[in-house]
Image 1 (cartoon, one colour):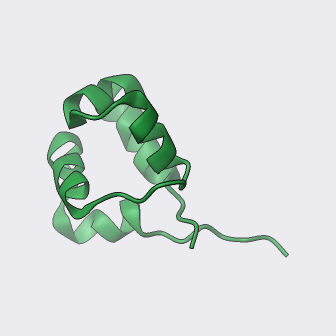
Image 2 (tube, helix red, strand yellow):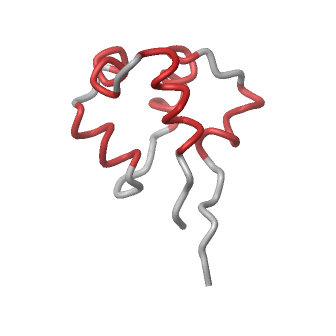
Length: 74
């Protein structure tokens, strides 16, 4: 299932300016963040928790940022 991370990407830009800065705060490589954002690899629960700390995401907002399904065109 492809997820839409556009809202997450916007928050990363707002809070960290770049994915590279976000990756550093997450203690992940830029490549790792990139493959997760492109849906090629999933986010672990631990990573989601840390991202929430880094970006100030409330627990009730996690589905909005990490589990919004991508709308497929027909």
